[in-house]
Image (tube, rainbow, N blue to C red; front, side, top):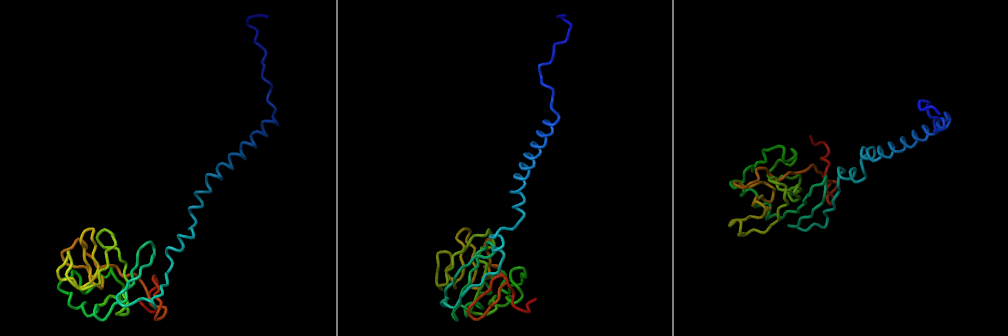
Length: 207
């Protein structure tokens, strides 16, 4: 054999039908792979059951709530406190004016118009508040008793945040000279009847 004679190929000539079959199979596998990768992404576009519930109104039974007692519920990832205030608690509120930064609730973003009053509530006895401190979002302690406290010698009852010593009265109004500068937020709410509060829905006709 001449050194310059080309060697015969040992590769089998490609079968066109086999090539088409392999191409089709590869396309199917690729499509399945893309579909599998896309499915988790598409799933995130649909709201989960939990996400649907988080924004839904919450109805709370308050028929068994004792005077001076507070119950807590979760709404939109926030802790909402509902307190039944006593006549004594309500009588303390006007006396707090000189110690408060915003006694008239003039910062309108902190409560609906129907709660922009001295009680910061629809009904004087039932207080509904987002109980996250307006400084850094901690949840203050509820100390309803009147009397000297380590943090205040003339305590009239209210909310005390031990993280940075912010204080709020029993209407959620912030004291002067503390880190928090805003009153506690009053969420939208209404009464379904005398024994049920609905968090997340304004009263009928409210603007």
